[in-house]
Image 1 (cartoon, rainbow, N blue to C red):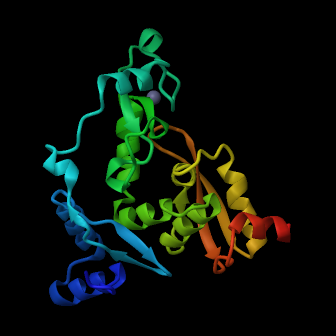
Image 2: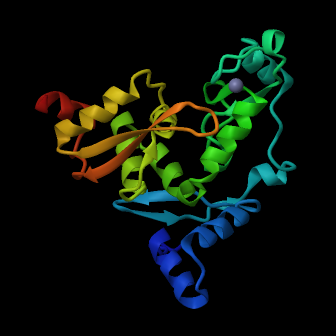
Image 3: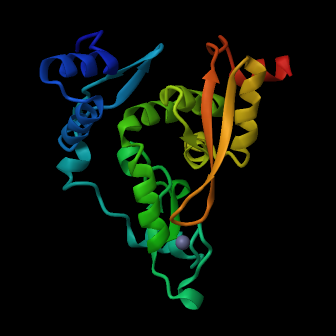
Length: 234
Ligand SMILES: [Zn+2]
């Protein structure tokens, strides 16, 4: 295997130079290839590289395996939409199993990544998250960071100064261990010299208030544990 394959940014600019394709289109091609190959985006210092690591096994097993009936039943057991709180009994909504971190972004089929949503909330969420598909690989790579502060920080960096929906930060922060207070973890980045601003806006579709985070300044990660460094500087 080539030890220094081109970074994601190099591939994008090469393709843009050759074909004039926008980065988002290039990313889509990579996602298409993932139907057949296993191509994780691997963090390498500041860059991300695509690593072709083999055939897509899910595909070989006949696309992605569907969730088991038992898993579905467990997720739907509360019989209440995790977002709007409506229930099939009182509001005649239909509940579906939702992946908090979408599968296309590397979300697993583990119970912690699944929740019941009504069909309205589910399609709203799909449309909302769909706007961020161009960041799919960066989101995947950020979620792979070992520490919650690292996952949050890398996600903010990935958006390159564009606003990140708080909901997405919460999901990515909780990827390896559940974070009940990701807002606090985000604030703690300030102890490391990071700066960001928040903006609230109302979702015209649902009327929900959404909070967005925009990174203004970041610092390199400390050598050792991020948490230990934050405790030291507090
Ligand atoms: Zn709902």
